[in-house]
Image 1: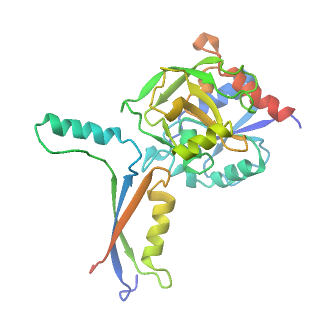
Image 2: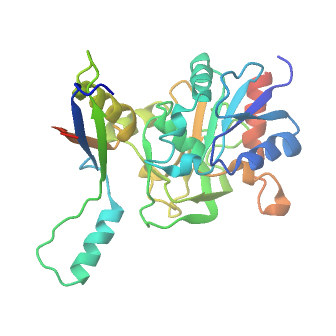
Image 3: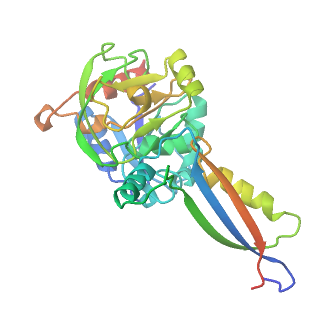
Length: 226
Length: 90
């Protein structure tokens, strides 16, 4: 396939869309474009990227209203067709609300908005999003959220573990939000949809504190061009 | 709206499932205890919706409310809901 083309979805209230576009287009150097929430086609794109922010003001529940945006039908199609779909922060919340990922993201146990550089570990480096990392590699990736406590039932957790769907965990003792099993990011069963609370797009330039997010993008691009 | 159709007042309550931790409820409970009230064991915070509706021929109001709750008002992963429907003499 020719050079991949990324769609960065912009919902009303997205605020990390420019970060994501910057990381993909300017830092990594791959074609990326904004696509509005009311677009009805993702024709010509190879991956759908859902940014962080406060879509629809976080009304009702984070991501609950964005999941009904017209473009989400196309995101569902991408997920069904095995194309990569990624959500960070609010994007992760939207993917959970949309049923593309299991579980839900609830208010942090601390009741505080956490804004810090999280200590994250690669729990599974055999996904299309993580293959350029070592297993258990320790990463420094920013988090910034108030509703990041990943919650699943005991049965779902067993299933996630058995299917190797847990891609990222917070390092022991560094869980910023009370997520079950220190989970920071999960994939769907097929492995083509990933959601995570940390922001890899904010960790692509060493000058700004960390470049630990770069292998995330290179893994994904390699998986699309192989 | 035809005047002959029934009007409804629907109230929906969405609460966390018992298994889900509610740190906001715990914070409120802590405040109540600090205020000196005795006998308050737990507080859980939920959501309350007031909806006005009218009869649509062929679609029972319960069916519509169930569907809205399942798809939007509650997240079945972590929440449950109940509702009351009253006929409204608007």
